[in-house]
Length: 162
Image (cartoon, rainbow, N blue to C red; front, side, top):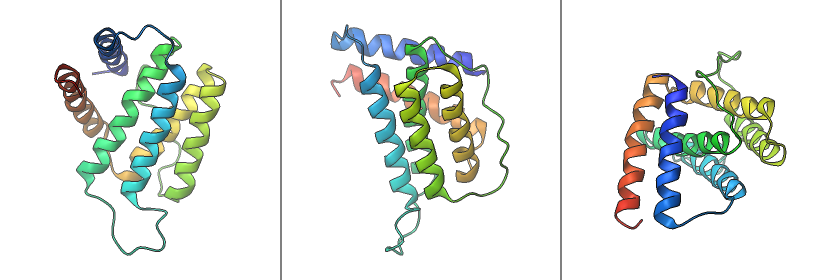
C-alpha cells in the first residue's frame, strides 16, 4: 500500500463523516486543532515530559493508536488543501532524539502549516512524524495496519452515533 491509498481512504472517511453529520462548511481549522490535540495525547502517553513521575510509558499498542489518530487528521489536512505525499518520508535522523523537543518541534510545524498551508510546510510535518515513528519504534507496516484498523473503527463509530 502506498500513501496515495491512505489519502484516498481518508478522503472517503471524511466524506462519510461530513455527509453523516451534515457538515458543509470549511473545517480546516478544526482539523488542525484536532491534530494538535492528538499529538498532545500521544505525548501524554509517552510521558516523556513528566519528569516528576516515575510511571513509565504506555504500552506500544496505545502509543500506536494515538499516533495513527494523528495520521488520520494529518491526511485529512492534506486532502483539504489538495496536498499528498506518495510514500512515507525518509528521515535523516536515525538516532534517538529528545522526545519533548521533538513533540514541540512537531507541534510548531503543525501550527506553521495551519497558518500557511503550503506543500513544503506540510512535508515538514510529515518529516517530524517520521522521526516520531522512528523514535517510538514504529515500522511502516505497524502504522499501515493500525491506520486501517482505526479507519474501520472510525466508520463504526459514525454508524453508531459516536
